[in-house]
Image 1 (cartoon, rainbow, N blue to C red):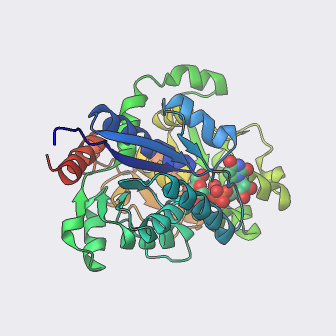
Image 2 (spheres, rainbow, N blue to C red; image 1 turned 30 degrees about the vertical axis):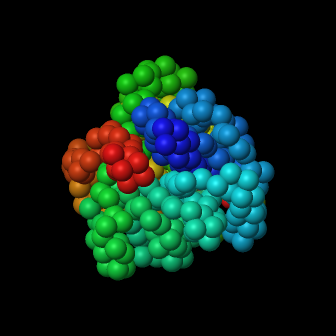
Length: 372
Ligand code: UD1
């Protein structure tokens, strides 16, 4: 007796662009309480400096304790490589808890390895469902939630989804949207004026476009249709379109460059977090298929038109500024006109999108793991 036991090791897993934004506030809070040994493992799913390094720099995320060299590949290849890497790491140092965030392939890989090694697993952003299994992320979400011991949900709909699936209520904690923690922290210092100047844009006079879902960009007919609609929008307002590597490959492959070569459209490399939020906060509207941007635009009260058939984040539509458009470019242009003429809905903030999600999660983990 009297000998102080070692701190419980919490392994935080991140691998792809949206993961970095979600893990940052958690690492901060978990470290701050000084009761845990917090490590960060980068699974290597995203590896380009514009897809990974820039987020570490901008968000002040500590250097990963371990990096797995995995990279791109088919779903099985990517998931397999990350699983093999993680199994070795957890065998060398067995964590007391593993935290995964979001719904990317890394999230699923980590959940499966953790669960098979009988290590407790926490999922942040649990319970979201699009009810569309054609989206790889939906499969990742379902399996990860099924395997998790602590499910931290971002919105009330997530709690309902989990209840429907018969998940034990005692495992579910409504803690709010972790993305908003990061957004709230960094939006003030984001210097939109400088960024608008850099790109030659004016506040409220441009549209931010992002697109990377396989269902939109891997199909020549759909991508062509969306490209024409974006071109149409660019006749009324300037368009800035930072192009994800997947999309960039497809635009070249399908020879669609011509739609984007007009003075009204500015194509850029993928941009970092600070520029993204600065542009989102000053845009007239956002046109996207991203999950994160649907939420960020709701928080910033900027109209968002989502080019997907459904969303796993329905509060952005029922309470926020989002409209689900699908790939119906007629509807896209109608909603665009509503926005331009000031007739579009205004939206309000969903519950617990307040910047305190990481704090709530940390308190719960202290209570559960340290019995304080
Ligand atoms: C992944 C996530 C998606 C998330 C998105 C954010 C899955 C199934 N999908 O999609 O949910 O919204 O990240 O960006 O996990 N590539 C590079 N450099 C990189 C990373 C990727 O050039 O650093 C290229 C590669 O050609 C790769 C392709 O982009 O094959 C797709 O990358 P991948 O991680 O498989 O999926 P994303 O489309 O990025």
